[in-house]
Length: 208
Ligand SMILES: Cc1cc2nc3c(=O)[nH]c(=O)nc-3n(C[C@H](O)[C@H](O)[C@H](O)COP(=O)(O)O)c2cc1C
Image (tube, rainbow, N blue to C red; front, side, top):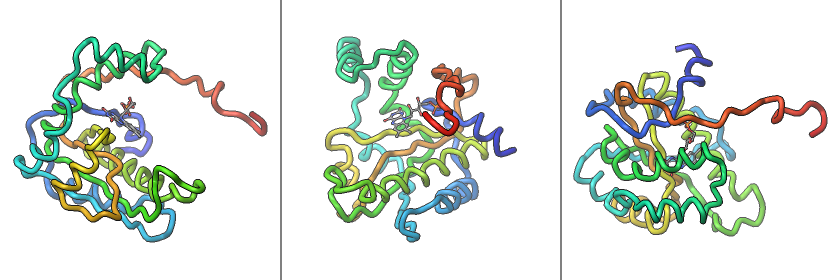
């Protein structure tokens, strides 16, 4: 696929066909992950590929299966989600958090080395490892789109990171920024409408 077609076709996918991702496709996607820019030249990243259903079930059993209407309304208030399209995105995405990952063909678990307290950085450089792994995750999302597959993301809330560490056994000096579900997008899936950005209001020439 042509590069800008990949960029324009990539969308978050939260519903999948019951279909595996071939190993050679996964290999190309993960190889793309390790081509991303890296802050310290080291690409100190690991990816755990979870395909075993029992392991996936243990990994995901901490994620809420859904959300009540009242809790959804509370979340919209608590997180100050004031834009209508943004609210619609959350209303579509939040109830799917467990199912999207449990129905994905595989769960990719990115890990990055973090030597300082990420929640109390002394300067922006202390967040470079975190920034770099997201560059790597961006490559995964685009490579998956180029291969005709789709991904969803789940950023760990509450104890989900510690739970993943306990289930998957990754070392204390590595952090998990998110879970990535990957699979074949469900046929006929309507993408969640996104806010149109008028680039003229966002791109500035020489001065803000
Ligand atoms: C840093 C980051 C965190 C995200 N966290 C979640 C998440 O926890 N759950 C989820 O369903 N989607 C998550 N997403 C996906 C966004 O909801 C999605 O990218 C956004 O709505 C734009 O839609 P698009 O990816 O289809 O263009 C996250 C995306 C990013 C970049």
